[in-house]
Length: 313
Image 1 (cartoon, rainbow, N blue to C red):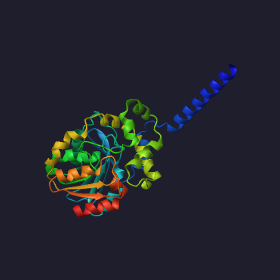
Image 2 (cartoon, helix red, strand yellow):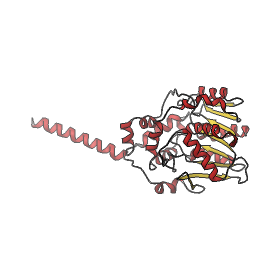
Image 3 (spheres, one colour):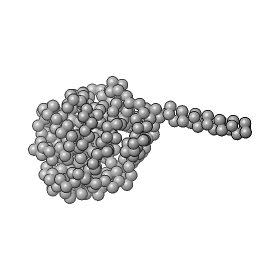
């Protein structure tokens, strides 16, 4: 009996040590903006007050450009996803990009309202704050859905629209990043608010790339650290509770502005068939497909995707 008790005690101790090791290596509580800004918000980043938030944005390029290009990132991304495009555009255009509420360094909506219509109103408020009357609006994934609703809300303000692997139709993903799946499950989500293995973020980013070998440790660092910004994980869970994107599907044919649709042929989250549907439903739009790229083609290969944008502009 004493031998069995010793074995049991030894196993229990081993389990405890394993759990302690998991907690130690996965412990990742929220981090304040002040601790993240030195790395992720050096100049030309600024923080501008919009709708009660200090919004992290970058406003670069030609100051007298009559049609600035505004870039909206997707779920769990940030304004940094557009680094390649901004570098290629700012010599000849004014380029405005920002961290949408609930992501990057901007942080949560004060009123906890994550409806897409609220995001669209926020975009127009941000443009008002910057004194911009008319723009070329581009959005990836969820940012594309925000761009669609913002265009429907104030079509006279949008000169051209660029949709990159955009949400807007009912989803039938072939694969969902593990980080999104965790955010949808109440128990795991609560654990993920204080415990987040970096490997989960790495797997999620690799999942949305057409060529996962392009994912670098520096890229994973960015996604991981900005996920830890105070309130971002809770904001993601709140947004994913809301109604599916098909609420705007029937309104997509109402888009009348010139539209370019860019899509990654290896997008497993929002498949290329959705890009074809956008091109069909928006009269006069044009579809450009990049066979070997994934859900964030502008980030994965900015040079090639930007070339298509320059032809459109």
